[in-house]
Length: 419
Image (cartoon, rainbow, N blue to C red; front, side, top):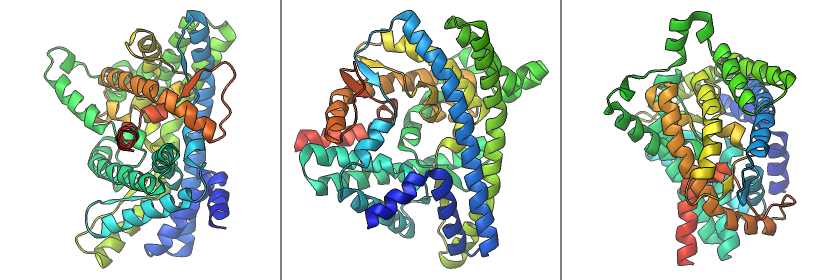
């Protein structure tokens, strides 16, 4: 019964369950029903807008990516099939799923009450990150307790990283009282921030500052985010040797994404602000000395013009990396257009400097490729156990999102070594 209810809500998607969660939170924090209801609906509208724009951008970029792979004859044995393989494994194993879901939520509440974390993770869909590592270890060891413990440990690590990220997100993206809880995003904070400090010490390079705002100030209309997006889309399409009509389509869609995503994030923020204000008042009234930050999906950051621009620049870079990087077997495909979720922390420490984002993102994605390659044999076997349909012709499958969860990789390796 519980699993049916969980599956019903999850199958409805973030545009449905996030408004429900926001409505419930608003009522708990003392908002009147009408105001909480409006906040929830506007948040849902914001997520729909963000996902629509990201979907259109992804569809058009995949045309470029597939053509680049075909044109330059990339030959790698581990195929990136996207996050669906991770989600399939995460939700595949009966009774352990609700146990992990309840465990991580209860642990989150307890850790807030004892002051260990300030983050309340309301992004229930992305609990699948904890579910994945728990299920992967359970399927491998046959020990449910070890799987649940691993999922809880992964959640605790994620919450502390989300705490660390919050003030930097607030400063860089003007999102007070909010943070993000995707492990594939926040786990790279410990890489991105130190690398940004290292760049500070490198002469000449430390002076290069390509923020969208500064580019726009210098170039006027030709420096606006939509023009930058269109220009990068044009260059990628020309490298892929696409026909003129397709080049124009990719160019206008990348321009549209750069123009629309910040506006959709603005809609999302409009819905979230009453909740964050109510949460602050509620905590001040009932839990003096505590602070609650709302943990959301990284989609709220991926639409920032600097993140989108860096993503577009990194696509050809990653394809080149895949070929020349020693030890890599991963052919990046399905998730290449969505790498913004992985490289937010390449951009954030430098406050939107696209040049630094490209440098740091190259390092991050090199590690992601190697981790995804390491996961491939395990992911293929776990996928078979979870009845995932292996694409025809693929010897091994993997995904960049799981490669982006180095915490899950580390926990899995420890469990496999011991058990």
